[in-house]
Length: 95
Image 1 (cartoon, rainbow, N blue to C red):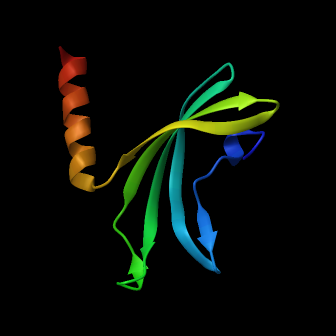
Image 2 (cartoon, rainbow, N blue to C red; image 1 turned 180 degrees about the horizontal axis):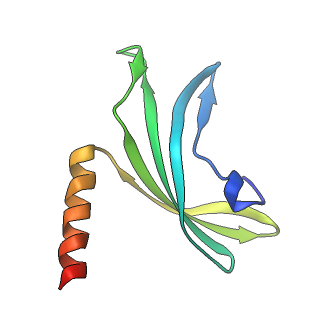
């Protein structure tokens, strides 16, 4: 992994192909040994020979022995699912 939260990534390469391509990331929180990051990414689809539509993943990391390791993740698999999460959060926050 990484010793600096800014260096954490989910980008992944296999046989010279970037299988998971990170488009952006936002550090949602950084408190003590814990960090939560939202990644926007695309996944290589061999059958199509192209990258997928944008996907999103929230990852939770913990730093121990000067190195971060992933402790939890939640993948948002589509734009539609992301919009539903946004709508639900906005409703709850407005209450």
